Length: 150
Image (cartoon, rainbow, N blue to C red; front, top):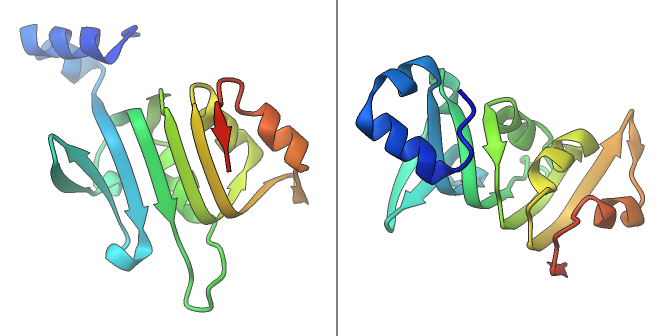
């Protein structure tokens, strides 16, 4: 019920569909969200893009490479709900490349994304906890494996 790696999980569900039925996890390499693209999450596997309608899926997601989200409301203000909406669907997160633009994100949600991130880009991102903005130093500490932070 707790696969150690995406490769192990893929082998399990290829050998017996019972594993997927009991523990439905969809492994995604790269996930993108741009509200200019019709408010859809997209994933790219083998250079083929597909929309993800995560609201209608009961499966959890395991993101293994990159997560990129950019949002704006009609007044060019950051939007909060986008990242939080996919966080609740995550099984595990092994993101290496995280890019967030024009986002409001809870510190706890950022912590779920950050454990394996090596390359971080945060543009116009507000990180907060209990209604208070988190200092930059704490945001940097949230990325223990980061080699590059912008």
